[in-house]
Length: 324
Image (tube, rainbow, N blue to C red; front, side, top):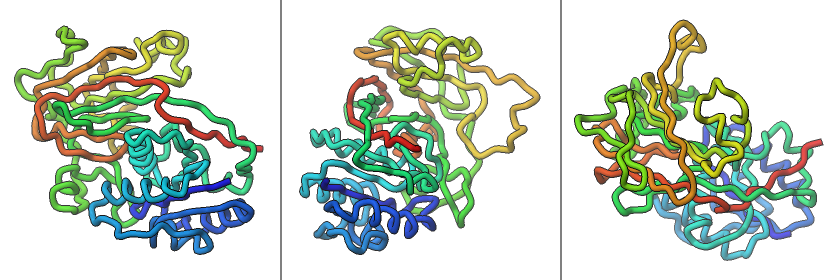
């Protein structure tokens, strides 16, 4: 088997990467392994073949460059060690370049909750690459104006912050400060993400909603039937066996943030859900300067007024290793 392995140089749990690398070296000792330069993998897999070339300084561009460099070795499997953000970047590059190589995600980031992250480091010793099963999953395709932004496998959050790590602590980080100044700044999530004229359409038709100034907007794929029959989830309980495999939520409170576990224990939080499926094009307009785009934990600056969301099924194969 030919295996490509890419490590996230900015992951929240990279203190475990040497241990992960040692285990992967043992597991794949009879296979061909290819990895990225320096802290993209070379530091953790010294016996692997290292991809050549000059890595761009921009983080997202460097991930795309490493993925394409590793694809040149024609791997049978692509392992990414990091969080949901790295997994989303890798998957986006594979999809947009027409690759069908399956992904195995090993948890090593700030948040590790998306469908690509298949295995935790403490389970890695039990990983048997010859016994992999595969699942083809879809995602939300996000555009700003007519420009492709990314695919979301876990969620898209409209807000001014994303969850990240500063000095080993997970906190709310300013999206704009990171993207404009390459600086991690801890800030309080803003609840003023819309302006007058905020609106939502589905296939060009205006959608009515009652939360006129949502504090946060979240859009997610719904491919796992964990919602089935659970009326407490509202309209999401219909998603398991319907063609609607995505949803948008308007929230009266900021939900995606670092918060005390008791923050929401004594009050109701209003939420509205809109289900949509393949072929639907959901658009939002009227976002404020704090209405930036965070996709699977990766922040993107909004350059145009309109943000569109389209669910696309069967985009990429995700490997699911059996754990004994």
